[in-house]
Length: 186
Image (cartoon, rainbow, N blue to C red):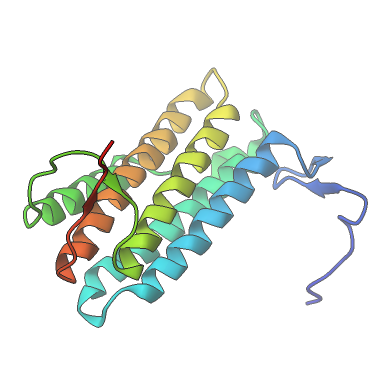
């Protein structure tokens, strides 16, 4: 299969549901933000230590969920294609919540705002958190009303919880490396 087909050379691309749209269309923006998030998560996984295998597996699962969400974003409301897409249910949200609780058990209490940074894995988690927030905003912009609203609610819950997961993961990575969080001193 040829990698480059040239069909986007004039600033247009296709949605999964078949429509041609400008590359700056809000659905393409949402897909781009999700793609960027999946890539940053890949860098985060690469920065994890070998003993963080469970976290690396969680990140691979999250990347898979992002692909499903991207397919949903790349499909126009009302398209028959929506009926065959798998969307995040309560399961992935609950998995993120369990992981947050697991990591928070070992963390010292938070005493203020922290500055992103520390160990490279923590810095990547903070970067992923900010990209997750942007992806959430972009996906919220394409969230329709009507029957698709319920599906979108699960997606938005997942993305919202994901940014919390990444924040706690950043703190957890620093803690595992013996690096204290840097508190912001206004």
